[in-house]
Image 1 (cartoon, rainbow, N blue to C red):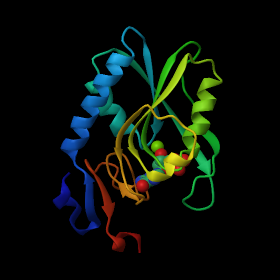
Image 2: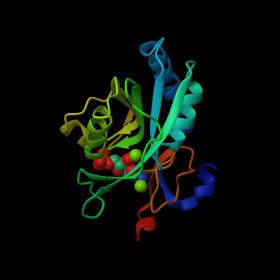
Image 3: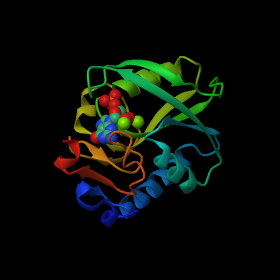
Length: 183
Ligand code: 5GP
Ligand code: MG
Ligand code: MG
């Protein structure tokens, strides 16, 4: 799929496929160096992190394990509230593990800060975060994100795992949608 397949749905491409690939390779190199000699467990947050997980994991030189969680954060409308429910839990025992959470995007960071303390409380040795995208709001919460792909403006984006009403996840780049899509 490329920009022409999307026709008039796309307003603006914020991060291209090539930029994503190059940045994930850089992050993978850092992660390989930082975790040298340790067994890393990558924890992907469904569904948005599927693409990041697949490409990041393949860029790593170290052997890693992968597991998945699905969470839903209750809130009014499109804002997340920080009240989180686990829809699908990990299969892996976290005792003593070095966990790297893999995320698509951090907006308010509320879901993620809940997730970090939840995983820490299970006895993990370390819990760090890698996200492809970060919005400006994320700066407001006390959450230390070790690996960030790109800072993006405060706009709703789709593609590379990110959806609008479950569509556009398979768009290979990150873009904003044209206003007519929402109406
Ligand atoms: P937070 O708790 O950080 O506000 O929520 C983050 C989650 O909200 C992301 O994992 C993602 O599912 C969703 N989200 C936040 N911003 C966007 C956006 O611009 N586009 C899409 N498609 N989802 C977003
Ligand atoms: Mg996510
Ligand atoms: Mg979504």
